[in-house]
Image (cartoon, rainbow, N blue to C red; front, side, top):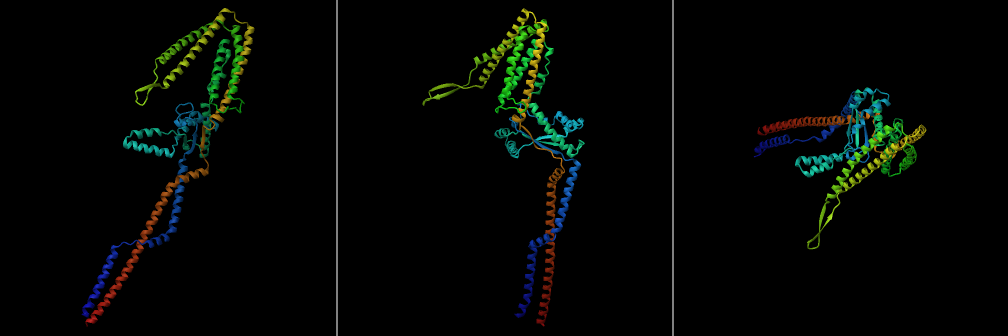
Length: 513
């Protein structure tokens, strides 16, 4: 009994060891502590490699920036009424490419003493793009996605409702082929954007063409009565313009340049018309002062005939409008009244079309009255010319002097209107309508900043890859070290087991003996 028990004990111990070894082989243990030890061991080499990689990426970004002449960037903004609808101050479609119009580029090159032959090449190197806010982009993208997936009419309507017209624009100047260094290119771009302000004011402020036409009038090329017509037309145009400015001015603007308000200028125009012009006109027409009686009579008759044709057309238009008003039926709405809903009444509703017809009729009547008045005026002149002798040479000399005085006053008034209007648009109406939000910078620090900005993404990617490699290397090393340690321990255990087995065998043999 004792012998049998002794024989079974080594067998049981051997089976237990085999099962334990088998369980260890089937279980994967993550050597967490070994991983941290390996990360600590190789931390300094990883930091050194990461710093070297960052320097390499930065140097590459700087080299790429210098070799490709990274485009200069600036940003401008518009704040006048209508830009949010994509319109210019005159109500027409706004074209951002006017920022780089050839005339502006050419004047900028001239200001900086550069060759104007580069205008076309520089213009093609400038790109302008609208800046759309992120929330608007997200909203448009969402509705577009819904529309494409469902073809929903509501989504399509929403997409149209959130259509966005930019009020800020980014200007990029790829100056690499312009033979400019970065500093010169920045000066050019900033000067160009500054010159655009002048262009903007001239285009949407005072009408320079009107001023030039008025001051360019040479009354000596006309007969005296014809010159009166030129003066009268000029005064009408000037007064209409000043009246428009006055209506749009809610601040009672007074120019620091001229000291005038628009009301002052309007009063000056009225004074020139009612005193100086009226005095000159009465003398010329009252005394029949003319250089050529026969030619003047032909001119008067031509004006009468032309005005009669215009009057006939205006009368026809007025009759058509009056007939349309007579036959026009306003929209009606039936309103039920009473508890039993048996009684009702019709109410006539306002109509924009009807109101527009009334406005057209008023304008047509005004035109008819104006033509009739002008025809009567020219007929009176013609009758006076035919029934009376022409004025003497002395009268002509007096008219020459008086006419020069009136013309000088008129030109001075035009200059005052021009200066006051320019001052108004620059300091009041359009003071903040256009502004350079972010000027271009050609400094070395800015170049470095651009290089740093350009390298951030590749640097982060490179550093992330390096960290992944570092972590994988530490894990692999930890498993290798753990495996070796476990192998050594297993070998020791197996040796110990073999020794114990041998000793047990020896004891068994001794017992048997």
